[in-house]
Amino acid sequence: MAGRTRMPRHPLYDGARGFHEVPHPAPLRHGPPLPPHPATLEEELLIQRGEIHRLHAENRHLVDDHMPLHRELMGLKDEMHSLSELIRKLRAEKDAHLRDLIDRGLKLEAELHAVEPLRTEILQLRSEAQKLNALKQEMTTQIQGIKQDINRLKAENQQIPAMRVDLEDLHQEFVRARTAFEYEKKANMEQVEHKQAMEKNLVAMAREVEKLRAELIGSDTRALRPGGSGYGTLKGSPDMGYPGAFADAYDGDKGFYGANSWGNHEKRGPPRH
Image (tube, rainbow, N blue to C red; front, side):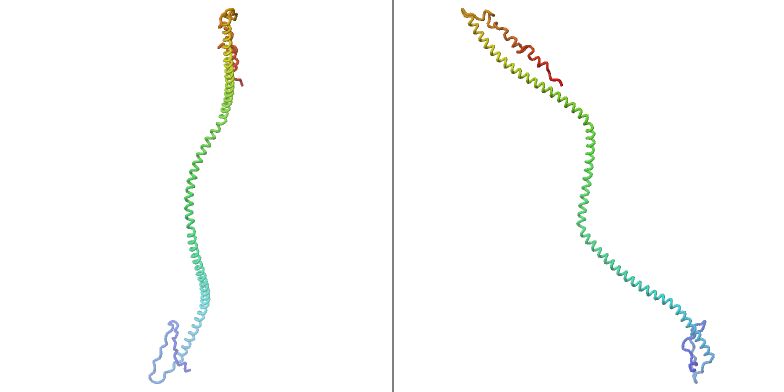
């Protein structure tokens, strides 16, 4: 009961005005303090009960609000944990990717150093390719010239059959001319041999004539001697004794064997084919 006379130490809640401090009564100078009025105590109890109900309702509201927030907080914590794991994983992947890039860069640098001789070789190959292109153009020009020559030769080859016919005619004519030449040559050789034999015979006959003439002269001389008889009574002259003995044989127009001694050879001519 003693506590009923005491004033509350916490602020009082006044509906529309909210919380406010309860004024402390002024201390009495003479005698003990007066107890509070029962109505005041009842009012204070009602106020405290209302405050308790309000706090209980607010607490319930806070609990109701706290549960979703708690669930959301737990979800955020899980999400933060997942994000942390993801960040750690991404960092690990990033580090691995960076290391991979660094390794690739080192490998590429090494390959570039190794490819440097190939670059020189490629430049040489390009130079050779340019030379080959120039040679190709030159060969193309030569091939075009060769094609033109081939076309010209083809045109000339088309004339070969006619040329062969002409050549065959010329060959036949040459054979005929050669045959005639051989015949004439053989005939001339026979004539030369015959002439040489005739000359030899003429020389021998001339010697024989001289010998006979000398004998005739000797015979005529013996016949002219006194008491001798000879051949002078026949012709009267040694030169006239045989004036025509060899006249026909030495006739320049008729020859040694008569007028037709060369006639057969002159009229024969080359053989006919």
